[in-house]
Image: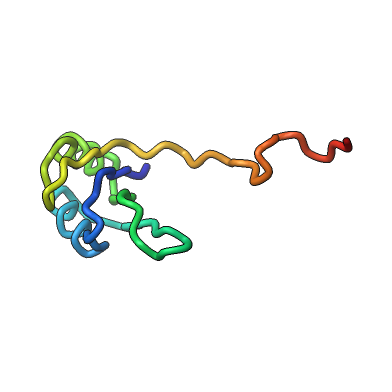
Length: 95
């Protein structure tokens, strides 16, 4: 399982998030996606912890908490959707 963290301050770093979530258990991985064109953080991230119970505890404690001047949105991460880059979903169709 992975945790989604939304409404992050744009100056938050992986180390910052790791520190906060370490209060609830062992942090295995932190990922902060950046915009491809600007390199700027996108305002959300993902954290993986060593057990589901640690993740559940972190979610219940941190969802709605104020951190770095923003109210965090903390939820279980949903699986990534496979999006067709052409937007149609019809493969190998001739027109």
